[in-house]
Length: 355
Image: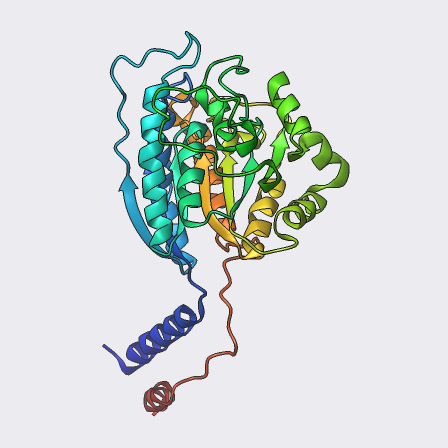
């Protein structure tokens, strides 16, 4: 090996080491939750693997994050899981899966990690938020979704539990939730004032009643059009952490985006977030410095019409995750205090080469 080549490689290693030392690293725990029984369309259980295969862990590592992969949970179906009241589907299976997830999220947060939960359908928000509150009971919740997911089992038109997640978490609704089989472990853990919705555009009558009568802050796509995403995030963060800093749980349903951007999802609704709006939400949550747990849910590779639709949806899920953890649209720049200087060894080797 020539002196010039050795000197060049030495300088390259020194430069890489310099930037690595200057990166601000998060400790990130990844939990996969391959689960689909909160709704009727199978395939969404393939979301975690699709997002992993798309390169999420590598992207996070390149950001300087210390990534701890807790693997995928074993979420099985409960035999003879009859509908509650002949209407609410798979209550025991959904309840069991969320209990397992809650324990895993609590463990990951307790280990000192910022946790990323890869779903799976949005019924998993029950276990993810509850598990987070076991470590951080004063958290607040940003629910980014086309749907409010706050129907009770008695107001839900479909009986699908992925549309009821938030109602199980709200203290104000504890006397409106029947005792579903599979949910005896769960107690309400957040208040209405602790929640903000962003991106709503398909809200059921019961959900609208709950949001209005219990004073839940929400920004539909109409409000986003009216005041812009910058003002929406300013008001969201002021409402939740303006008076006191506290952990943020970000629960992001990929169907919050317009279906032209995220076609591989089970309940698409036209008129959703643009790419830039979604990235701005994630960036502002990161800039708050208070993100604790992030859910990324409802990526369903099985219902995509093509490989291109799968890639588009998966890449979007990865982009919002990395933006929430520090990726900027200017590039993943690490913070540096000064430029590196050539080493004496490099300069000496260069002089030798010239001779």
